[in-house]
Image 1 (cartoon, rainbow, N blue to C red):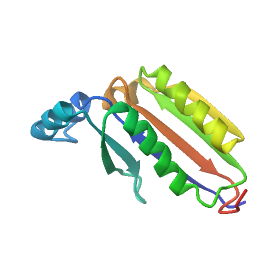
Image 2 (cartoon, rainbow, N blue to C red):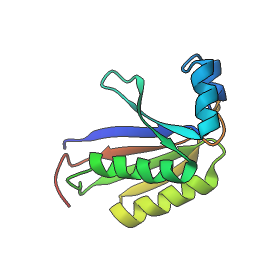
Image 3 (cartoon, rainbow, N blue to C red):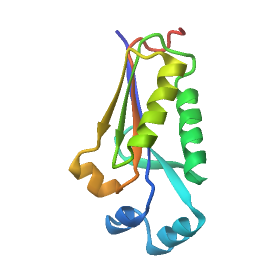
Image 4 (cartoon, one colour):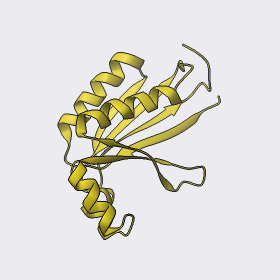
Amino acid sequence: MRGRAGMLLTVDQYDNLLRSGRVSRGKAWLAGMLDVKPILSLDAEGKVVPLERVRGRDRVEARVLALLDERLSPRPRVLRFGIAHADAPEVAQRIQAALVKKYRPKDCFVSLATGVLGTHVGPGAWGIFYQVEDGDSPG
């Protein structure tokens, strides 16, 4: 069985990223003023890297789902999702409903982020984790 996995993550506020040194004070202030939400992922070495920036909560949800769709093309037959959130249950439920409707995954779990993760990303953060079990077989 071939497989691959990935993650897309966004934060709602920059306070925790500022405290951890991941963004500068100026970038955090400007992003907060413009309501810019980062979309983050993991690189080949497992480091968190920025993919894009989107203005507004509604737009970030749509863009994360579009990026996920690009990553999952052609459509795999066997797919699992996990959604982790830091005090954002409404977002997690909307994302879960969209994923189940579009992909009909084998599993689609929602979980509250651990305290350690929540400390780094702050309240309102959420991420989609995916696992493809059948490689690139279209479904």
